[in-house]
Amino acid sequence: MARLGRTNLDVYKLGLGGIPLQKLSPAEAAAVIQASIEGGINFAETAEGYGDSEEKLSLALKGRRDSFVIATKSPKRSGVEMARVIDQSLARLQTDYIDIYQVHYPTTEESLRQVMAPGGALEALKAARASGKIRFIGISGHRPNLLVKALKTGEFDTVQVPINAGHCEARDELLPLAQAMDIGIIAMKPVAGGTLDTPSLGIRFCLDSAADVVLVGMKSVAEVRENLETARSFTPLDPDEEEQLLAEVSQWGDNFCRRCEYCQPCPHDVPIPKILWISNFYKRDQGNDPWTVEEYASLKVTAAACEECGECEAKCPYELPIRDMLKEADRELRVSSGELAKRRIKKAVKKIIPLRRRPV
Ligand code: SF4
Ligand code: SF4
Image 1: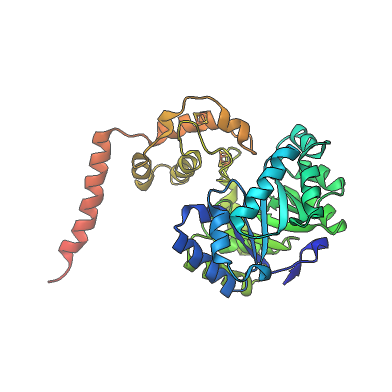
Image 2: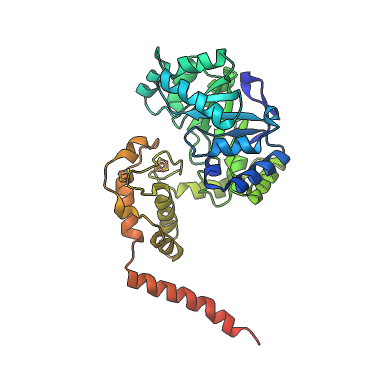
């Protein structure tokens, strides 16, 4: 167990990330949460915007609320809106207190200023803390420099930031500052949104950082058990493993989608993270793996539906040129229906031939 900075909360080194819960059925989510609890996890982090993940968490934690640390968050900037969403989170979580409520995702100096200004979100969070609705105030974001400015105000008890082999700028200034100020450090995205080939390497990389707790989004009981085993048997990466991880990350390039999903929803239902994820695999295999075009062809909405409104780019914390990336993905991945049929036949034939060769 680790002490989460000045909150003095005791948390297991692995925490449950709430994003995937919204995509699971209630039974699947309950099984993932149950397996996490059985393995010693006592911290879950979610957001008012992560679909029904707060509700699913509350159902699974019925009767054992007090043995669990719950953190949630909202990107609301005004005090009035923040006060409203805190009450909504309390209702969805079916609890009368939330351990940590975080300011979610300030992307610009201006958005941070709005949060901190009179009448801003921070004021509502402090009022909620004074009335016992929340216990601690945290901040979560993708821009270490901005988070440094936020922490220097002294208003935050915890900070949540991505830490992975391809995104570890937080190590330069943010993490030492948080440690010096006794602010709890919550690491997220250890496997870069599911992109790393070997998740255990990413988790171990992150466990070896200054983080008090490492959040991992888990979609199945098997994943929970695997990740718990990684945490239990933790050793720092050896030089060969470090090289393997860095070699993989070096292939990502500048325009790499971390699958944080902040660009969603698109007004035209373009599944941006999914398309950029497929495109990433396509590039990595230089188009040799037919799975990528098959997967793209199976999407209900493809990049061709993009109307180039730019809404997604304004929300992307990594300032990715999403519109251009989508155009490129569509160029690479879209094949004619005739070509697709040919590929499918080729794949089916490959499957049949070994069957025929089997001795009778
Ligand atoms: S630019 Fe395209 S993908 Fe992005 S939000 Fe607009 S329509 Fe959706
Ligand atoms: S495009 Fe940007 S906002 Fe969308 S998932 Fe990727 S990194 Fe996140």
